[in-house]
Length: 150
Image (tube, rainbow, N blue to C red; front, side, top):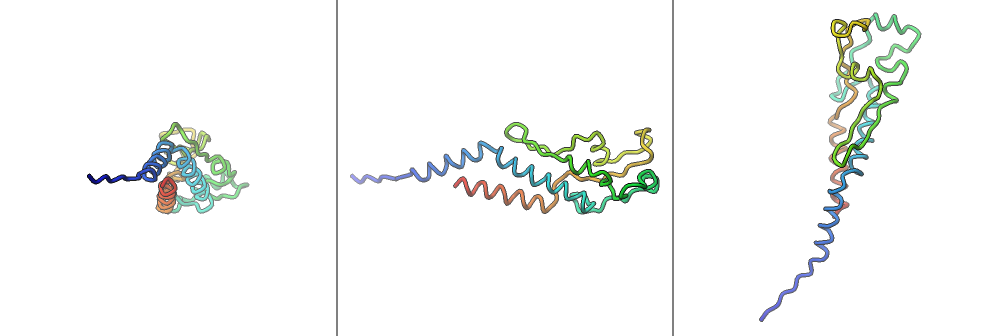
């Protein structure tokens, strides 16, 4: 009789390590959140959206209202860009956000007809989102996490 013994301890250990890494996504999500937060903050310096499109310039009405400020789109006080945060929610979600009440208006835009308190129409100036560069960085991070599990 022939007896073949297979020592699969290393494979089982690697599989357990992979399972542990993939079961706890929070470290990866936290790193992804920080990357997206930094990317969103950089958009305020570049005045571009995640798709690379340049934000619409301030209107004449806005420039007159903010004559004492820089006039640079969405950066006059710096508050919106400085309040970008990331937060891991549960075990499978990362949230990138600003707590500023006007953040959604700046992201999606709005018209004076919809929001009578505005001094004019506000064009969408997306600052949140995933750019092609962000996507590459995230995929690279995830590959590293999976490789370290092995």
